[in-house]
Image (cartoon, rainbow, N blue to C red; front, side, top):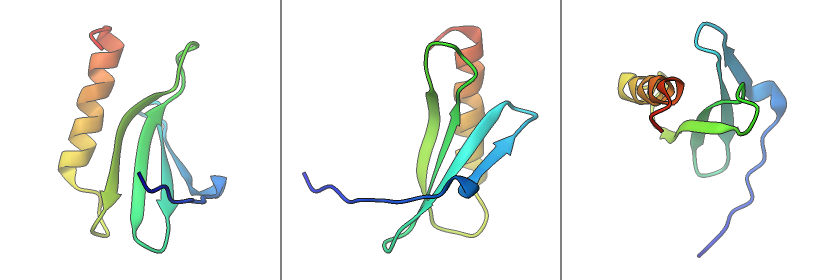
Length: 78
């Protein structure tokens, strides 16, 4: 398995206060990536969705998937 070193800076973290989640933006020589996560639970950081960005705008499908996983997490069905 090949591993790559990816660097990011914390100024690339975006909050979605209405949902209580955050997004880390990562860019390297190969592409751009996003990780949507929530860290408000005391016992863990939950990654809701991680994906490669291929267009300027985040695909609705990616946002809906993260939102669905957040709903599952809040219901306790994860």
